[in-house]
Amino acid sequence: MAAQDSLFAQSPVAVPLAERLRPRTIDEVIGQTHLLGPGRPLRVAFESARVPSMLLWGPPGVGKTTLARLVAGTVDAHFIVLSAVLAGVKDIREAVEQAQLTRQQGRATVVFVDEVHRFNKAQQDAFLPHVESGLFTFIGATTENPSFEVNSALLSRATVHVLKALSDAELGQLIDRAQAVLAAPPLTEGARARLVAHADGDARRLLNAYENLAAAASGHRELDEALLETTLGELLRRYDKAGDVFYDAISALHKSVRGSDPDAALYWLARMVDGGVDPRYAARRIVRMACEDIGLADPRALRLALDATEVYERLGSPEGELALAEAVVFLAVAPKSNAVYAAWNEARDFVRRDGTRPVPDRLRNAPTKLMKSLGAGAGYRYAHDEPDAYAAGERYLPEGVGEPRFYRPVERGLEQRIAQRLAELRALDEAARKAR
Image (tube, one colour):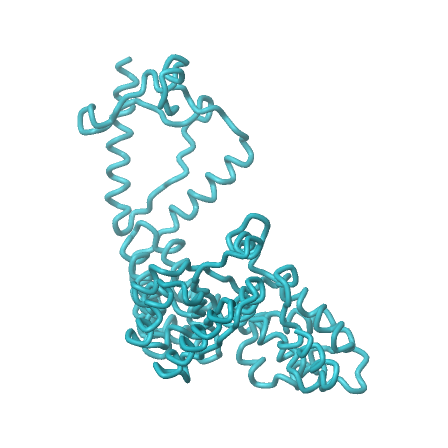
């Protein structure tokens, strides 16, 4: 660490900003609080200095390499870095030899494999005996789903930790640190928002862009959107997550699907992908459309949207984009219903306004004799013991709620049959109540 400090002191400009701001303790890490917060898995591992082999799965620029380095520092281990893009079995053998030598010297070894998903099965298998024997702690970093890209034998020997993209607030903290280091002019609010949006959760992307922006700031009292546009140029325009064009294109895609126009839906999806939008983001929006606009009119829509998302995760671009295109076409031509979407919103609003009502005794859980003696579960009618497996006239809402009827199926697609069934069941309820 002392040598690194000396390097910064001698020529800080030569060291990229992202490297200069790399955290040296877990308390300096921005983000990943679900792993590093008090009592969380990696925090506990760091504090106990007992770090198991692991896979760090997450998008670019979220701290996978940083966490691996911190692991090595925590256990005072020799740190070996392999890039699966460049390394082969020969490099793995050399890493094993280094680990054996380091063990003889009384030190542990951490082998970090960046982009481990790019290793083939044989290369991944080469780590297995040494991970099992404890020769070294294995840490793999991947942007791809390890369930698909890491062989099961290695996966079973490593704990998977999912890292998240940094939030806008966390990226803002990073800008503040960078500004202090570079002593750069302040960012305008508009420039700051666009820079954060451009980063899209990627700390490295943010710092590289900010460093370029600060270098171009000679003679400026502040860093504004015009300077940001000039510095980042086409990249910023094509991936302007904060801009109107980005949100307008998403809106147009969603409305084209809702309006049952497959050609327009394909056009706007192509516009988004061509404009630099991460297809994974488009996939998430497609899943949302299946829930919001098709719903139970055709339940296959949600399954197809999820399948398209999984296919894209497996194939990436450009092959996986075809699955997204198939999904938007299916959603566009499917019967539409927002009945569940509307019902869910109504139910949430009702609960917020109504407060907390007690669960009726007959519906309460009664796992113990004491709870049964207190009346829990008494009078409950088991539907499967009733004619047609339906307890006609029974109510499942708290006392005083009435009949809110949140869900109102439409006369399209499968919901036509759902509406018919609900009408039949309500008729049975009415008859049962009149007979009492």
